[in-house]
Image 1 (cartoon, rainbow, N blue to C red):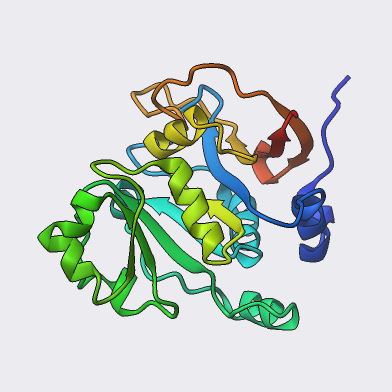
Image 2: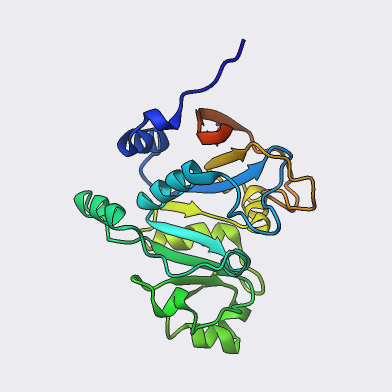
Length: 246
């Protein structure tokens, strides 16, 4: 006997948003969004683009729609070739109807401050981005250049303190934090016990190569999560949501 979860095809966007916002409290909430293969690879041929399919992209866009800030580590911004944080017209319309700014803030984490201030991420941003870096990174030549195109926020002396990242965003009124990676940054968040929610798309494929896990690094203990939902996407993709067990 085959038992499958509900199909995402049967849910409207509003239905999906209800699934992904149910139980999210007022105040700071850090959600992490990843895709992985059945054998645990967070990429295929070094990129995530071929994993997850259209249903994963649908959820991805909806999660950005409800976010105050999209948080990404600098390595992922470079590897995935991010552009400016510009939402689709339908997402902007939804945010206006719900009293939100047109676009979420784009927040980038970098220990060194080594980001190109002339990148489209900054020059074409609809909202001034935030760069979360160390004191050393802010004082570097690239960090000083970034101050002309972004708000540069110090979150530690020589390296970024991920707990300070969350506090710095909350202090700016950016409570609903949507984090898109990468693996090293997620590992640091796990170690700091800073993850409230993981939305994980499981692609029904075996990568069988040397792709990274969704989180790398070490944590002093297991961080227990509990399942909230599992939805079935096209081609056997599973879209799962997990929140803190406590």
